[in-house]
Length: 213
Length: 230
Image (cartoon, rainbow over all chains, first blue to last red):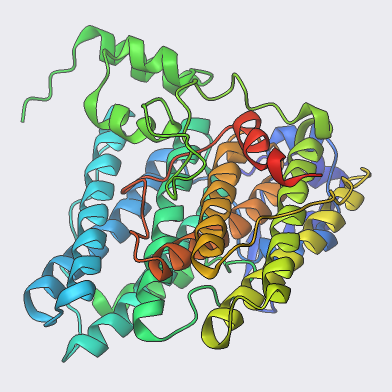
């Protein structure tokens, strides 16, 4: 695998690898514009750059397929939950809204991947472990928060401005879902001033329990 | 499903792969490919209300880009950071005033204080980012907010947060630095959380724009908050 060194990597080799919380090391590919423009002191905003590492090989289609996988998962989760989680009243209304949104995300991402000449991934086989409404909504809170972290983590790698805006418009909705579910659960709708990110590895680890091998 | 692409769509895809295709160009070339169109329609080209009393997005009918400049705050990312900083100053001041107003108690007051504290954190982070970029942080504006009763204040809070979230979304594609983008996104989703929480407290939908949040242009956002700057 050839790795192109940006001008920045050559001038600032310490930026080439970022160790995050002593956990993972990722190569941070800085876009060409960064090298040309002002280089923002990483210290100032490093708390938010946690895990927002770019890899040279993630094209927009691959990123969209990553998002699509998560949306398929969420879509299946809510569809199933509406059948067997036993929600009623306002909660049922909320879950219906969320379910509709996730379905729309699946449809839009699929269409966009095709428009870009890519092949959309197929829906993964999934299973969710919950026994009642409360355990379902607890799981929903986790899944939505993972979704926010996943999108925020990968978004800086997106090359197309349109795709970036679209991803932003989806992640904001996932964050809204997370907050609404949290309120239902008596949890904090906004636990952090800055939403943390997750790497793809961390996300896949988080959703692994839901994927049927 | 047939895999036949019409000539226009093929051209659109090839041009998009080559980069540098504007949304409008793409829409016209592809003859409005439905899925991509729906997806990109999040870019505010419908006739959603821009009424300040709306607790939904304030998406504009103007195409993104025409009124989205942050040049008055500085060049490039610096201008965007200072624009965001100005909005965060306004939000912080708003929550501080609300907390002092005596209109809220208990859990609602705790929420107000928490959101205000988070906006204050945003102010600090954005100020640091501007300084780190060698820029001068935008000044804290003098503000005044109408605080009549709890319901009116919650509605105002909801409007401001929904607007703030849309403002960040409107700038995302303009940001050049990946670090600044990462920071902006980490704040953007929190504003979305705030907006959804406030909407829920008001008995309104947490997703007033539906599945795709709408971006708002800087010009419109600044007009919307101008009444609070004295």
